[in-house]
Amino acid sequence: MAEVTMPMNGKVIAVNVEPGQNISEDDEVIIIEAMKMELPVVSPAAGVVKEIKAKVGESYQVGDVLAVIG
Picture 1 (cartoon, rainbow, N blue to C red):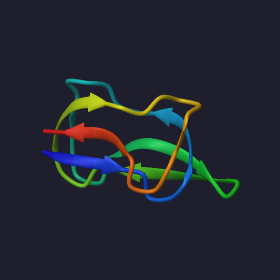
Picture 2 (picture 1 turned 120 degrees about the vertical axis):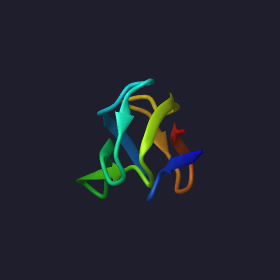
Picture 3 (picture 1 turned 90 degrees about the vertical axis):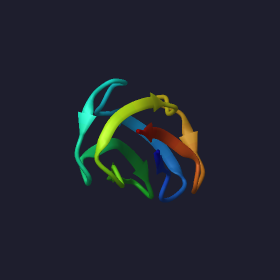
Picture 4 (picture 1 turned 180 degrees about the vertical axis):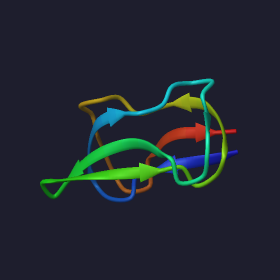
């Protein structure tokens, strides 16, 4: 299992995947807004999206788990 984690404090503005979806390493999983910039958060590994923990509009801290890839 691999976890997609928050790289810096910010807010989730888009979720680009859904549970059950096959993804590749470095696919954009989530888009965050931090320091007035939009930043992609990519998958650390290929696999199937097991769970999306992030919600659009919610703020998260560095290291928070946004999604789980299996």
